Length: 138
Image (cartoon, rainbow, N blue to C red):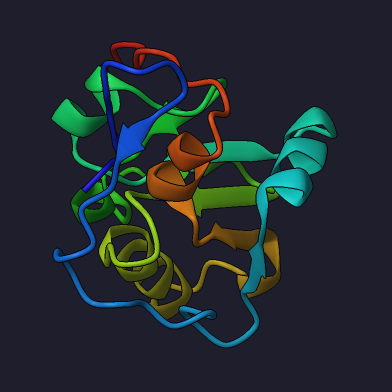
């Protein structure tokens, strides 16, 4: 699901056969953002949330991301704070994990205007050779 480094520097293999392409907006009122917007928002204090399962997060994630797995988002809603902007991502445009988490949050009353969706996820981030780090244990 996430591009795999090859033996050549800055080269990755991309598997395009998994998953179903997700919509640009996972829920009404939720803005979809790209890499530059993500970096600016995180620099301004937004909370970056990796919605993938623990093992994917442990292997690699975006710098500064916390892990709130998509299947535990409601029970861990308190980890998202009371007023911070929250950016969710997962494996990429074909992955339903963060869109599912976003829909669950909005259905549970979390304000849609406090959520941003980074649709590119680990797939696009890695493909563009942006930095990744191992996940921090939670």
